[in-house]
Amino acid sequence: MTDYYPETVKPESQGSLINTGDREFLPKVNGHIHTPYSFSAFEDMEQPFKMAREEGLSILGINDFYTTDGYAEFASLAKASKVFPLFNIEFMSLQKDAQNSGVRINDPQNPGRVYLSGKGLRYPVSMSTSSLESIRTLQAESNRQTYTMVGLLNRFLEKTSTGIRFDAAELQRRLARNLFRERHIAAAVRIAVFEKFSADEMRIAALTEIFSGKAPKSDLTNFAALENEIRNNLLKSGGPAFVPEDDKAFLSLDEVVSLIVDAGGIPCYPVLLDDPQGRFTEFEADYQSMADTLKSKGIYMIELIPGRNERSVLLDFVRFFDQQGFVVTFGSEHNTPQLDPLTLTCRGNTEMGEELERINFRGAAIIAAHQYLTARGLSGFPTDQFPSSAILEDLAGWGKEIVLNFIRE
Image (cartoon, rainbow, N blue to C red; front, side, top):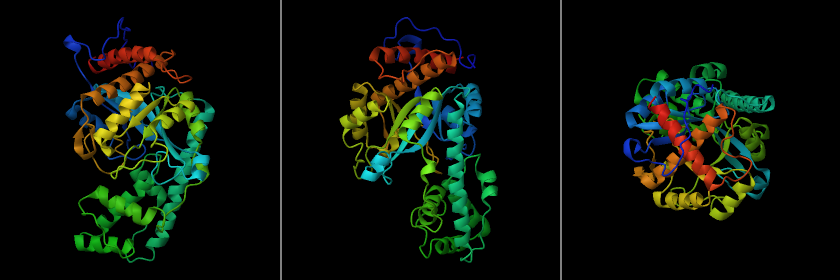
């Protein structure tokens, strides 16, 4: 679909990413949001675009787990909204050696588990049959685990006086698209309790019984916090409906990298960085070792979720990886029930500042150029070797023009 993007002439001179004159403009970017095609805070696909327009965002990146099914709707709404779309995807992979060694990578609870995004996939979607089959297998295994959880949950609820019971297939039809996730179950429990019991006292009593005698800590009006409590009490390790993930639910990191490249995308490592207590995972604690390992795995792009990091820590980290030649992007995820603004801030609602916003736009512009070029059957971001600074500046300058043409068409 080469006509999806307005034809753009490659600028003769790149110069600064932000030109002077009528193009002195720093677009606001959120390169990583989940949508209802996996699980998100948004009630439908149109909502994030409405929010983007209200908040003045120019670039938005879909980043659902295990699926590209939302791309067509996302592309159509992006065109109508004049918001440039980034076509991304996310996977959970498993590094057995790290798991056996107890090394946490970018999951603070599960050693060996690695989240990995693919940025700038081909649109329309195009990948090999084997890659499509791998994604379908991952979806099926994820849904199998969730269906099993619903069965165990029903068995547990039968022992309570709530009279609540669920049909997994009906829940999937009502709350999900084709990917049925643990968070959908938590939402279903909360909705069922609220529909069955009208008084707050009765709702608290029902939740207390469901939580095996522990009263809910969250305010009943805070649906996001309440659903997290439901997950922690019922669906996580030690809970009555917990189902451990089978190894079949994961590809290796190398397999995920290959799948992303096959789909025309750029492998991108989502960084966890500091938690509220200032702690890091074993893998991320040594920046240089982390950079060397990512390069050895063919991963030359990283992304961060600024809302979970202290700005000072984030800035030092981003400067280090930017100087190392990595491309850096930022997003918000929005993969919980909490509907926060799309505008990115650091922990404590601290503004990112112009330096980080420029780096974010540069990363998004590089992805935009990659999408534009690959849609025309041309080479974009080099995934077979670490990119030179000259290549990145070339892509960034071109990507800036591509984005501006799209949002001002």
